[in-house]
Length: 131
Length: 131
DNA sequence: ATCTCTATATGCATATAACATATAGAGGAG
DNA sequence: CTCCTCTATATGTTATATGCATATAGAGAT
Image (cartoon, rainbow over all chains, first blue to last red):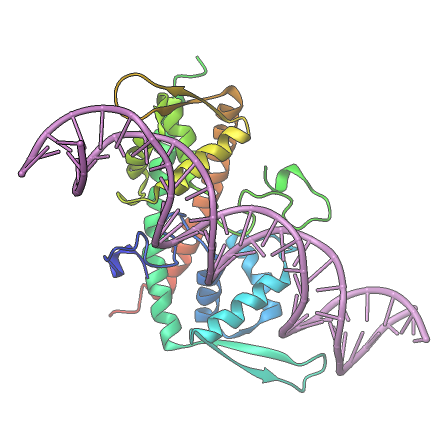
């Protein structure tokens, strides 16, 4: 997934944030929410606010991410019809998705460390500023 | 720069990471390094390893980011010829760049909080896993 | 009928990322 | 002198990501 998985000639070798702290932060959040319980996309939009996403988060990006997670085999879905209202998909985490969640947690811990380093240097540069 | 700066109909209203924890993390790192001292692009490539960037970081992305920072008035540069070797640019932080650095630090602190929240939930979900 | 809420999805323009490659001066090996 | 390497900056290409608008559609209320 990261540098540590491919040490070839490629500079980054993966798409989980070699240069950025985190790309696609929404994906690990969705996996974590689905680890707690299966849910519909519409509910997940609300639940993502727990992770600092805006209350009026673009729904399209959520559904797009869910479709991609499904393509990658990290979640499954089936139509959930019947109980009034339009049909909706119920998403569930797969075993592969849970493994990916663990990989993400390692990655996110590393990226948090990078931010800590940044903030530490920032503070030491400016701490004597306002005397 | 962020949500807090434009509360209109737009969902995010800025490009500093409404959905992502941080996009373009390299930019604040460059600003911080240039706050410490003026430097050449080539040196900055080495210095970026302090922030977790790969030792064989793509040079093109660094130079492109520096050009963009200059376009935005956050850094200035002038050619530094004479001392042997090819000509090189010496980059310096502007006052505007220093203000942006402060804005970035606020933003990065927020994003670190999001990661903390994620990791906290992650741990509480899995802490009783391996008994 | 029309409006609104729930629910999912697509289209499109632009931005960013990853990688390869181009250019060029200087110094050393042969 | 020619080739190679290191320093130093920059561009081109392709794939993916993001932001936002918009489409579709069922159900209940006015």
